[in-house]
Length: 255
Ligand SMILES: [Zn+2]
Image (cartoon, rainbow, N blue to C red; front, side, top):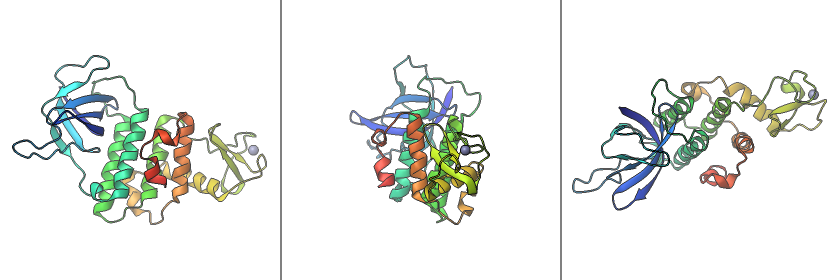
């Protein structure tokens, strides 16, 4: 059985090997030791095993719970070239991978019936990130916002935007009060007086970005304020009872 997946992280193991977490096409995670994965050796083979690259490898036997599979042969199916030359895009890639790693199921499963939503989300996000650098229209905050809006949607914690949390009146730009992350929605202005520009920006981003496919991102000329993606991240963290310190790349993205 041949498996295909994207590397979510990697660390060196012994002299020439790598340990990596991979999201498989079915959306499940697996951990593996890649023998000779650091590259080098007599033939000075390049590593190819970079976070964000797509690789395929055979599943020789199913690893037991808590075990890693041993991979001695693999094939590089897709790699990014431009992302690693642009530090903003590079951190973004690592941020995506970290978030995905937090949410995908830990249970190792190898059925290949259909592609998982989180696999599709990550592969689209990375492919169009690379593409935007090739075409020279990379806007970091737009990429990040789109990724986060879709992530919240697939996780089923997308905030309720249609009706006020308290009175149930329908919400729109003109009567928006404020967001309540804990409750997973927003209020109208009669229920809560205070409204801020940030609330409005978040509201319109959530509303507009949900239906934009990654391939259309490059046609947006205006960049979302970075504050919006910070609040989307806070929303995510609130729902998973996590803190910014739980994400290594958080400070590289927002500081
Ligand atoms: Zn209300």
